[in-house]
Structures are given as C-alpha cells and as structure tokens.
Image (cartoon, rainbow, N blue to C red; front, side, top):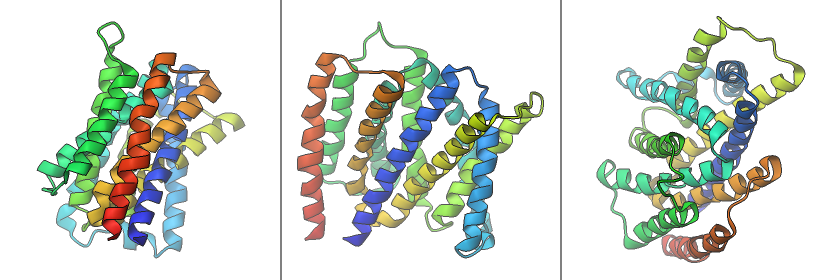
Length: 294
C-alpha cells in the first residue's frame, strides 16, 4: 500500500510541476522569447543543480554510470527523441490556450494503456479500460473537436501525448538498467546541448526576471520528468492504478489558464466536465485502490 501511495504522490507531483512549466513556457512564448535562450539557460541551471543533488545522494557515478553498458542507447535515444517534443510544446503553447493544451495531453493515459497491453504485455482488467476510456471520452466531450477548430498545433500536441505514453512505457520496460535519476539526466541533457547550437549564434545575457523564469522552468521540468519516471519505477504492479491520477493535471492547467491568461472553457463544456471527472476520481480510482489493498 505504501508503494501505491508513493506512486500516486509522484504522479501528482508530475502534473503540478509539469503544468507550472507549461505556464512559464506559454508566458515566454507569447512574449516572443527565443526558445533556445529559454531552454539552454534554464536547462544548464537545472542540470547543474541536479548533478549537485546527485552528489549528495550517493554520487554522480552511482546514478549515471550504467551497470550494463550495452543499454546506453536506451536513455540516450529517449533524450534525442525529446528534442522535437519540447519544440512542439513551446510553439503550441503560443497558439493554444493552456487549458486546451492540458486537455489534449489527457489522452496520454489512453495511449499508455494500449502500449502497456501490447509492449509490456500487461494483463489489464475491465476497470482499467473503463477508467481510461471514460477519461479519454471526457476529453473529447470537453474539447468537442471539429473541422472548424482543428489546427496543426492541436494535432502536434496529440503526437506529444502519444510520445509521452511510449516514453514511459519504455521506462517501465527498461527500469532495471538505470535509476530514475539516470533516466532523467539522459532524457534532458541532449535537448539542452541542442539548444546551444542556436544560442551561440544569438547569445543572450538575461535580466534578473528572465533568469528567474528560465531557471525556475528548468528546475520544474526536470522535477516533472523525474517524478513521472520515479512513479513508474516504484509502482510496479500498481502502474495501471496510478495512471488515472494523471487527470489531476486538468486542475492545474485550468487554474493556471484562468489566473494568468484569463482562459476559460465554454459554459457547455464546463457542464460536461464533471460527468467523467467525478466518476473516475470518486468511483473508479477508490474502487481500484480498495481492490489492490485486499
């Protein structure tokens, strides 16, 4: 039971820090900051702080040197594949309200369930399918997508959701080759290095305000990446139970959108939202927890 609670905590930490990162990213994108200034400075600060942290919890070598050298390609390829994802996030948030962006990411658990079934060969009961499918349908109900409001950025964010699902499936599959800290470091490092290719041609000395925003976002995203990886590292057989808690990101996305960008859903959409949220959070999740505890 303690493992389950820890897994749920890390997923909720991921949704909070992830939405906070998205909020800063949207602010910077709509104010015409360059993505490579943002990611290179913020990423460098986050990596330095992360390495200092690792030094206090067993040493950098313990967490970053793999015991099985033949598997270095797994975390490195994950990191390289993360490069277009962060670019999509930056440019999509410039054109899509953060609450809609968050709702689109809520399709991740649906794709995660599919990958878990066919890649991890997990045996999933009907409650898992019902919980995730209801959440997916709820997203569709709220967004009510049509030809008139579809654009390339909406489709790209859905690709990010698919990537996220595949990414964390890989973490579950290869969790034995590295710690959650190692996976996080190799996931974030390639994009930071990639950002410097552009930064050196157009350098920036940030103002104090810019420095705070850049560094804060870098720390938030690395915590978000680590907490999700940690959740799937420790959850084990409970991984299918913690997935629905990913929907807590709806709360943060809606709240940040309202407070910082004056965003809101249409009235009819707000009336639709509690239908699936209330059912998933108050009925299916407690039911699954009770079943796992017996």
